[in-house]
Amino acid sequence: MVLTLRSINEDPARASSHALETELAQAAAFVRKHSIASIYHAGSGHPGGAMSSADILACLYGAELNLWPDSIEDPNRDRFVLSKGHAAPALYAVGARYGFCDAKSALRLRKLNSPFQGHPHVLDLPWVETSTGSLGQGVSVAVGMAMGLKLQGLSARVYTLLGDGELQEGEVWEAAMCAAHHGLDNLCIIIDYNKLQSDNRNSEIMRLEPLAAKWRAFDFGIAEIDGHDIPEILKTFRRASVTQGRPSVIIAHTIKGKGVKYMENIPTWHGSVKFTRQQAEDALQSLGATRSEIKELLDV
Amino acid sequence: MSSTPSLIAIGNDSLRESFGKALSALADEFPKVVVLDADLAGGTGVHHFRKSHPERLLQFGIAEQNMMAAAGGLAATGLVPVVTTFAVFCLRAIEQARLSLAYARRNAKIVASHPGLDVGPDGGSAQALEDLAAFRAIPGMTVISPADPIEMAKATRAMLEFEGPVYMRTGRSPARRVFNDDHVFEIGKGQIVRDGSDLTIVACGVELARALDAAEELEKENISARVVNMATIKPIDGALLKRCAEETGAFVTAEDHNIYGGLGSAVAESLAASHPCPIEFVGVKDVFGASGEPEELAEQFGLTGPHIARAARAVLERKRKA
Image (cartoon, rainbow over all chains, first blue to last red; front, side, top):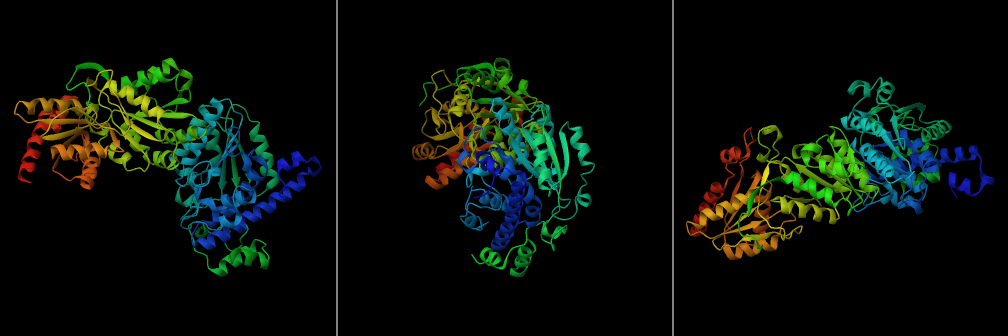
């Protein structure tokens, strides 16, 4: 059984933050390995951003979100919106880890008649909450959700993960202004700040810095953290959840391609890529997969 | 056939005012409705709603893209968002309408005021002549353009009762009354508002009143023109069009929109598949608008009753030769 905050709550004897952190690290490794495998089988997909966001996603689904496979229609569930929809393989993998979908089915990424489309689609997979894939829109949808929950007196929270390149979309700043104006303290924006985008470094394409100052000027509660440090991610989520009167943003410094040595910090691995068998094997090996695990993931 | 064969009166209410009043009057009956505004409540008619239900008027500032996508989020929590702005700014946010509303199949409504040359003095930049075409091309999007204040009020109710994304055009200028209070509006259904046997004029929005002007003019020349109100552009009432094709054999379409992609195209697509016959298209001929009073613009760009009558004579000529 996968250890989650709920299982800890249900069984206090297992309550150990160390055990949870260990589980979340394993979940993040699972997300990375499954993302590589599904992108390999698809013959296309974006591995870099899936690797950089794996720890954040594991912490959300494994600990922070009040969301379970049997509560995806509960009006008071927490919502997560993957605004950087191209990290879909990581979302599917974390969903598989926590029982929202079947892990083996999720390997049919980008295939004809598979619900695991290249970008998440809510009519295919209700638990992804909304359809994304056009940068800037997911954060607006999350703002609308946060407003709707408040209007209806529900205490659920809304989380959304944005890419750093995504911040070049003007809509993000429309959404930021709106969230602050309406005091959406039930909204938490997380930025997967891996410094790279499709073609090159952010700083070359369209610079984002000073990034924290931008969000501060928009009147957000801000945290800047290491997006691969699980205890720090968990602690920051807790702090964001008690922020009152304004929305939160977590600027999570990450490494694009994190965990796959040959991929780390190389922009080429952002865009949609086609893995050779050797590249997929090397990536999985780099992520600590055993021989039998590699075979199981790649020979389905 | 409606009980009202011709124009009733020239009222003072614009379609936007009629919409705003209807929305306010319906608000208690539809408690899940929230109205989204981008600093245009005075222009779109929703100032009535703001006055009656201020807590349900959500202000988004001048930021239509965020407003359109946020409507998807509001709908996801079970509310029924009604996005209001000018038609041109709906075009600005059309990709948000596509992905976050239509693709996600949200029960969200977009109500666009200030469409077409009816905008008048604000000029070409403000006159959306492409919105029916653009929104019609989005899968699952219902597209409505009511003709007069009575129909607008009824369409507002129908839109709220309908489950799914809707794009509805209102109008800026005082609108002529065509219908009585007993008018029945149903999404997806056109009505014959004046019977005739030589040809059928299909119109929507402000052009319906002008189509009735044309029918009057043609009657004096012993031409019997049937006039159909086609307030739902999508899904188009193909059965009614087929019947009219069989019974009259020639068509004129009339809309305050580019002749490409709107009502005329929808009628042509439908008839091409069911009962092909000659069609003339009255609309703006693939150019942008300009400043001027709506009636002056209608005259200059060819949207008046006499222009429709001229198109009717032309299509009858083609029908005779066919």
